[in-house]
Image (tube, rainbow, N blue to C red; front, side, top):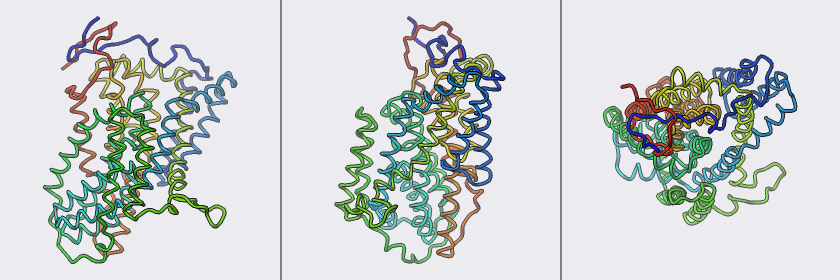
Length: 490
């Protein structure tokens, strides 16, 4: 048995991975035939995204067409159909769906429980102005996104109150808007209830506790660097009298942060994420009832008319239905890529050309994840595409710990994604920001300002530093017997 020294890699046999060496599903056209469903899926996703019509529900058609075309490319239609079923029944996919359902309800409870009002109270009552309010807005968005697990929900909830308040208090409008977007990206990157965190963890077979613990140094370092940028460029505006925004403040809303702490502490104690989310949901209900923002009627009631919502529980689940259906379709297409032999050929090529060392493998994972996330309007689907089929087997080939693989993928998908004007989070952020600016007659920056999102660039820099230097890198088994040991190139 050999210990892996710094700069060395372990290469294990392909038979130990989850990719079959011989195609289970044979396709007409061989490699290109097996690749066609992916080409159709990604092509339509890019088309919809560039047209400004991206979203998990519009993406359904892309997944359906990819599966249908794949059927006619398969030599054995029955085996292809069984492959689709295996993809839909993926164990990790089932965990992801269960987590999304509970996380969706939790996010609704947090918002309805007055978290926005509490964060606004904190920012105003602390007497912050100018650059300090910009930093406080970033921290508030961080906390809100961590608590709700949604970047779009964060900008929708916080921009209408924090942006006009900050402009009236002398913050730089552009940097203030970017501070809120940066905080949303931070929460999407680190929150245990975020869709990207859930997908990255469970596509890699990682424990949520290990993922959150090991990702924290990466995310918090990027957040610290973001604060430095905001302290330098976040002020300089003109202070004016506040309008009716103060009427929305309520310190009691901060109680909702306790329910977020319940989820995090439970996960860090080793509880399953499903169990942790249940505890968090119950805590949110209790705290919302205590602070007066929630009532049992809001949470669940018999609607007066057919078709109306029964309350926050139904609303929370309805909000993630689009993502769940699309996730199932992506898992089915991914299974075709694996069982048709496409991914085995891609991995063999990568290992022979661009990923011959641990450092190169990690940079490859980062690059491929970013590449898939750039054209697609939602980042969790990008993880679903590359996570099981590329990131997991390539990381296992080099003995990388499951949490490390999840962190490389999640940090990559939460970096440049939040700078592109056609991505959902950025579109929602800008739409909400301009609406708030029009309502109060204040300046609104251009949507292209998202390209300067400080957290996105800081996170990418930290991630590349980690991959190049080996900082924060963890192996799955430091005593794994290697069939090949190669020295890292400097």
